[in-house]
Image (cartoon, rainbow, N blue to C red; front, side, top):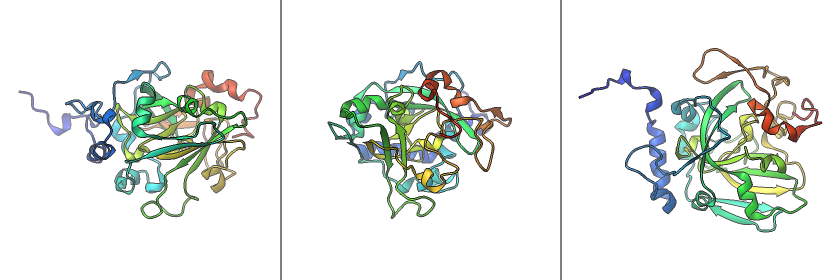
Length: 306
């Protein structure tokens, strides 16, 4: 009989209690047949599956699940990196509706179970870079945003996509930003194959602290572009003013493409520290996705359009 001592167990093998409780609460509240039917006997892939690996994934090893689910930027749940995981009770991820509206011919709303059935779920391991100088490699589970946009038939006048996050004044952070949290992309960026709506990570349903039940993931941009806990997606004809643009226009631009040559006014973006590593590494242009996305910005002055 093999007896493992606590010191023998890797932190990456341990599911944090808050994550476990949140997963169970999500499944119980959602009442989704798609989720319930997928539950196996073991802890892996609870609530999500089967998954299709994506050729768009990086081959780099993922950051530990513990780090990904306890070191977060989600200001609605607190401004310290540890706050979101400690304040998951402030957001109920079910029942939930995501509206697609604006300049579309077929506006409609989706429940989370509908999103799960919309297309085969893919696991995509993406490099993610935060503007503060840290980075992670995260195995997201999601669907291409382009798949969802096809469902609503964008009008010819639609040029941009605005993303609106859930905000509850009674339970969430006040101040800091002008809530609700707003983000935006050009329509071609939104339709790019790398852009996904994430419904999970590590083969499981998305924890609250990571933006449950559905969030935006755009891996060649800084992390603040990924709006969490989305309630609405609007197609519009003019460039949206996003939350961080409004709060600090000289520091946070609309595009927010990872660019080591453009310094933040208060720090350099030339290097980054991967969570779990002690040494810094050079920041890659477009976060290492240059071959896939650079053509969208041909001829643009990326220092001006930062």
